[in-house]
Image (tube, rainbow, N blue to C red; front, side):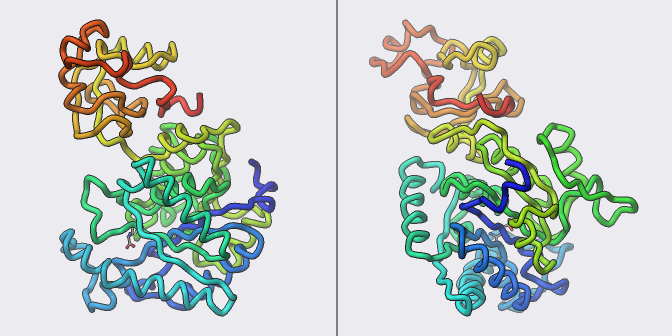
Length: 379
Ligand code: GLU
């Protein structure tokens, strides 16, 4: 995908950050919400559009009269309470912003756990598809009131990426409080807007660490990571201003707006795309260097003999990360055995599985067909 093919995009996920929906004092910016609503409605006339919106916590805090203070960060329960107060107002605000343009909205609240379960993921996909067929614009947020750390996506950049996988979007437009990604913090002297990031390398990720926008949960880091995962699935990402009138329309017309991350030419489809889109697995299988080599260089399945340790609670078919101990995961796959079973057969030869467990499903702990490599991009 190149920029000038963006006018042909038929399926879009737009992500709007809290900083775009609140003014500097932290109050809800209804004017900007209404303006964005008009632009989204326009985009939705010829495309399938799903909106991922932050702002529940910010809106709830505004309603409750809590002053946001960086010096005294709120505890989780307060944030969740704010989200519970703010979420209905947030969806109502989007409903009000879109109604004058004849667009109805639906509320969809998700957690990472929902999308990590293949069954629930497919259910969500069906619901999205039906909503879009009915001409409704789904308004998605994390289900913050129930999302504790273990099941949380945590930031809406990652949530937008998961939703894009779910609806098979071609493009994710992240509307934020800066014009795009800069080569250093946007307020620093001489900061330059990067118009296109060919590939998200380790260096780009490092650069993003220093180039943050101030008020979003993840700043640039989560946006760049999401863009990387999306690229591997053949989905493009654009970072653009959620404040500048017409920025979204210009982007969709193919103009040079913000920062564009083109997708990799070969996309991971179906189950592998879903696996690559998840932010993390339900557990981690620590393997030795030999197993890593067999997986990464020789395209093999993971056998129990290469397993050193197993962390987390997961059952057969759950997504799990595969890592060399103490390092970042290099692969993710569907568990062929549950966590407790894996602990009992870790380090054994395949011929010893049956004796250790009293039964055997498969030789493979994680089968190659159910695995994606995370660092090397698409296979
Ligand atoms: N779900 C959070 C909210 O609506 C925001 C998360 C984020 O901005 O990344 O307030």
